[in-house]
Amino acid sequence: MNTYNENDAKLNPLDALREEHTEIRTALSKFGNVLKKIPAGVSDSELNEISEYLDKDIELHFKREEDALFPVLGNYIGIETGPINVMIIEHNSCRELTVDLKKKIEDKDHKSVVSAGKALIELLSEHEDKEDGILFHIAEMQLSHDEKQDIMKKMIAIN
Ligand SMILES: [Fe+2]
Ligand SMILES: [Fe+2]
Image (cartoon, rainbow, N blue to C red; front, side, top):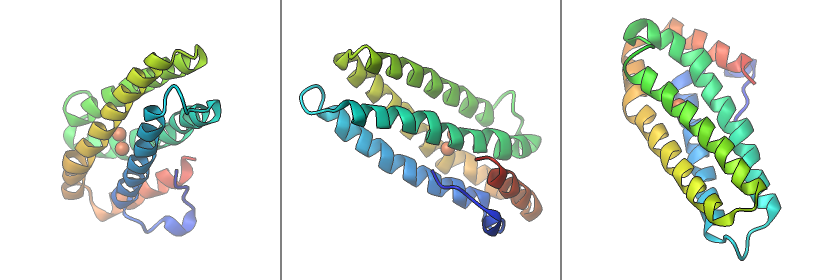
């Protein structure tokens, strides 16, 4: 996942997150191709790489949204209900599916790895589409320039 430094302080955080979504889509399509090779042509290292991406990179992306963007946007549209609430629920569902997938990888339960993996790819790609298509549009309309800069500063600190 992208890392940011002080030189990125002027970036629009929504553009930065959209770029992270592009990276995630590329990773998910690679992940889908690995699943297609199961069980014959898949190596442990390919599956471990996927687990690691979900644990580290996806988790970092979720944290940036949850700890930098959502609290500020929540001042306008609320956090406990509405679209931010739905996004948080979906993050947690992805986290649960990741735990589930890792267990199936460990058990070498290949058939279940495929079904859990597919469920995760579907949920995650629909989730990022919703953010790009709905939530980030709301954010572009509501957030001031200063608020966007504050969000970007927080994102730089979350690594
Ligand atoms: Fe998200
Ligand atoms: Fe996202």
